[in-house]
Image (cartoon, rainbow, N blue to C red; front, top):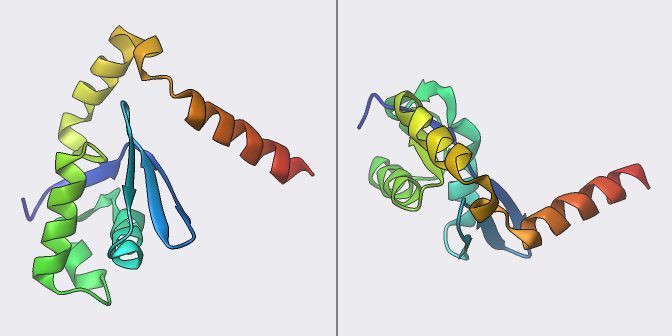
Length: 116
């Protein structure tokens, strides 16, 4: 696990201290360790290995970072970049089943707010 290069495949945002993550099939909320999770997510760019992420995260121990990454993997928020084709395959087979109207609405509202 330490040499995986992970990539985020879910949309996420922080609102009032709660992390909201939209995966392919569900909305996941997390109210604990939000700052640490966001910091880890920001480093998951297919360039950093897990070892490098552990070294770069400022407020968490190695154990905490590994727990966060394990949670992100189990909830299908991140994938090993070498396995990313599986995610694309899943989405492209039946794309309509993954449309979240709540997410579409949020994305449209965000775009409108940017233009105003």
